[in-house]
Length: 79
Image 1 (tube, rainbow, N blue to C red):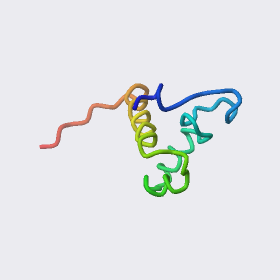
Image 2: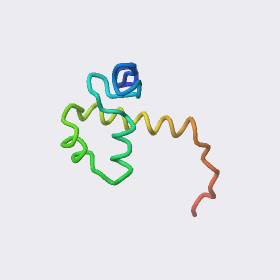
Image 3: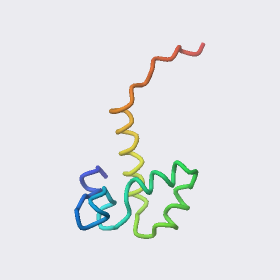
Image 4: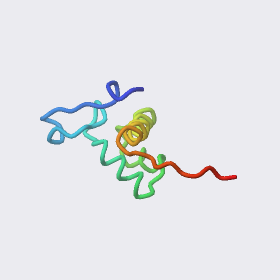
């Protein structure tokens, strides 16, 4: 599932924030839940309109964004 298939932005839904397609759940809300330590199972219970596949797409999106936006410093290789 890629982000074009999983997410949408519309002015009439959550003020134009990026949401999981077909829901009113902002991607940033799901990422904040993960950052606060919620498990994927807890998140799926809290947001029943979000599928397991869509939550996986949110996580993949965040990982890809981090690779694009955050330079990773070179670390010495452990022996």
